[in-house]
Image (tube, rainbow, N blue to C red):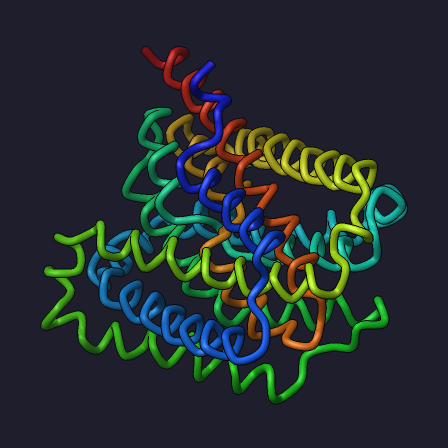
Length: 319
């Protein structure tokens, strides 16, 4: 039963939401948290840039069909599902939560957990490293563009030049600086993975606390009754199930090996909370951010539980 229990980070997220609900930050304190959050996000993307080895990416580009399939699932299949399923998903949630679902569909794949589950399932780990890393890098550019396209018809506007500039300044420039500094500090960053994990999770918790503090002050829990929360869980389960089925049987139809199929399933069906929360903070500055990030927070835990079971099942069949 341990595989179905939430991990330590998920518990931290729950406690952070609870803290924001009981003690929301406001006024000058909220401004301090905003500044701290911006700095933490910049440091996070700098460290990701310093960690990502260019040599591994170049070496893994040979398996271009696999990488193209993963990117198509991440940045084409998911957005299409979000739009096509609107008549089914939108009635289950509020308009702001459905906007969060569309945002979820635009996000890149995870890195650490995609690689970990591929390894457990005995898939193509080197390809998973490249596919997940490429998805994370390209997501800095593709996700904001997809957000602009998907929300254009929802009454929330589209991409603005201010948003583009904010993405470049807060996300891309720190990442590029990390890539430049990789020659000097890349080995040190990779050897101190705990530091990156601390910054990774700490920045997410900061954004979640400030976002939910503002949402609570705006009456979040009065606008989120239990049936709506249950509808959001159902919507997330439907999206994940369809993505898992599409990547599994799609990879088989395209003639991939079993090892490559495993990589495509775990890299092409997942969404990154680590990338999603910072991008949401930049793109949805004037919107109820708590509602926007709630879908990806729930999707994060659901995908971990489901993929843990699926990885062990794959492993048992190849033993």
